[in-house]
Amino acid sequence: MNMQVVKWCVDLAMGIAFLFSAVTGTIKFMVLLRVAGFFRDRPSMAQMSEVHDRAGIILSILVLVHLVL
Image (cartoon, rainbow, N blue to C red; front, side, top):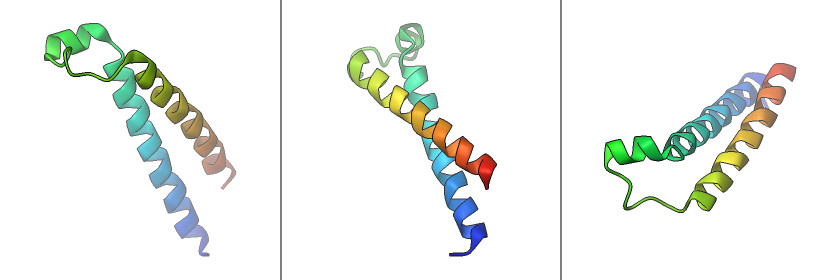
């Protein structure tokens, strides 16, 4: 496989992991949810923490791969 394609795929995966981490991190702030009006229909905090933590770990691994490439 072309190295440029590999780098592009790693960068794309990093962007997706960042979005998951950023969105779940923002959702975890109760004050922002109350202000935005999303307080009633949100997933449980345990689910948000799980997704947030996994996205952070995946992002960290992808950053290391990115730096090696």
